[in-house]
Length: 344
Ligand SMILES: Nc1ncnc2c1ncn2[C@@H]1O[C@H](COP(=O)(O)OP(=O)(O)OP(=O)(O)O)[C@@H](O)[C@H]1O
Ligand SMILES: [Mg+2]
Image 1 (tube, helix red, strand yellow):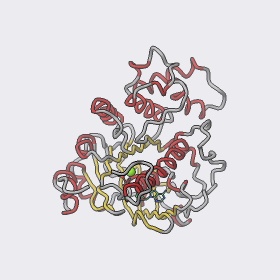
Image 2 (cartoon, protein in one colour; image 1 turned 90 degrees about the vertical axis):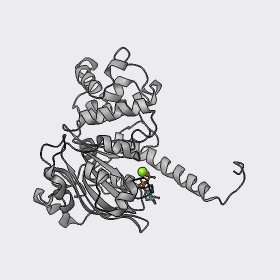
Image 3 (spheres, protein in one colour; image 1 turned 180 degrees about the horizontal axis):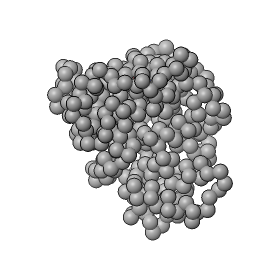
């Protein structure tokens, strides 16, 4: 291995630099998604409902005519609907229907017309090898992808039958309805109480008192499985919590906005097995009352918690359907190779 200060053409250096750049970018958009107005790296909040970020080619206006009827399950997932997973009361009721999603950066297409169904109440696991576009897909669902000035996005993502790329979409509201939890826990540098109360205060017309917020804060911390560990000192700085606790706090902060969908991008990859197990329990408890779309590299985790699964490769969905089917009896050879650990 070369010393740190020696110039190198090692491709791993280039990869590390690229990753660093992406993390810097991610940090900005993570905060944008979480809605932190105090962070100096934050992209300014969306000022008007119909503002379109530079470089974004939203889906054509015709897309706004999308009706709930268009959100029919894709053929492949419909075939696997004979068994109803535990969390899903009605598998043909799609909270999210992604249709023909194409994303390119600087003209380089990363997602090539992706169709994915997310039945309401399900845990939908997105799996695939590194670089296949999972994060790009997830970030396109709550319109974070377009924060990259080189991004162009086409296709439809219907949330309850309405295309999120329609002109006039209120991005702040969209990101409350579709919350996001990231790989690295990103609590705000403020107290535990204030982290959870943040969205509640933002949504209130006049600033609510602490005592009036307390029942809701307690409820959300209980749902996130953190209450017992923090109830004695809610004024502790959130950054002094352990990584696993911070991640549950981020889930609590997301829940406080009362989302319909939570997107999770490898939420356990920075956590130890015990914290991972707690987050998995939490996801299983939350599912049903809301929908979780989770990207994970941990196939065992995807099998444990997924009701539905989609396998992506090089920007295409190769296979999707009931998680059990995708992981245990896939139709495609490529899926079989991936789930058996032959690559990825
Ligand atoms: N903002 C961006 N600008 C340019 N290229 C990007 C940007 N974001 C992602 N990409 C490219 O898109 C491709 C897919 O990246 P993405 O992060 O979506 O993959 P992934 O499946 O999440 O990978 P991993 O499993 O490693 O997290 C990569 O080639 C990446 O370099
Ligand atoms: Mg990723």
